[in-house]
Amino acid sequence: MGNHVTKPFKKRNYKPMIITLSVVLIGAIAVLSGMRGQKDFDAFDVTILPLMNAILNSFTFVFLVCALLAILKRNVTVHRRFIYAAFTTTFFFLLTYVTYHYLAPSTPYGGDMAGLYYFVLITHIVLAAVIVPLALTSVARAWNMENERHRKIARWTMPIWLYVSFTGVLVYILISPYY
Image (cartoon, rainbow, N blue to C red; front, side, top):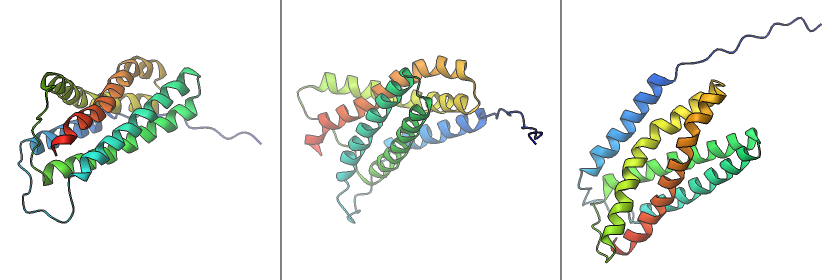
């Protein structure tokens, strides 16, 4: 009666997985950005993919805001669920993003707000690369129950990820007339 022994919690080393995923994702996106796209692809109109990217980024932004509000109310379960939802929409964003950039040629910006567009685009790209290892490290620390270390990195991860998801939508809005 009640004499069962619970196993002690064992922390896992997620660092090799985080480094590998970060290098592979960022590397694949960098390689794709240098490609021209498949000119003979006509199975469907690939210009729908950037709209899907923007929608997925919008969902990520909303999920992150909800996760932030949940943790401010100390509701860890709801916070965790919204973070997983944000990871899910980010994963699907990456699929559509990589697919679009593999299939379509680059779209030049042709508007009057080039300075604003390129500022937003460049900061978005740089911080999108930064967010990959940050978000993975944040979730790994949560999984390892390293709550204080999780909070420390999440204070950087959350605003950067919010910025990246918001500016992803903004980039789409600014470039969409030129598709």
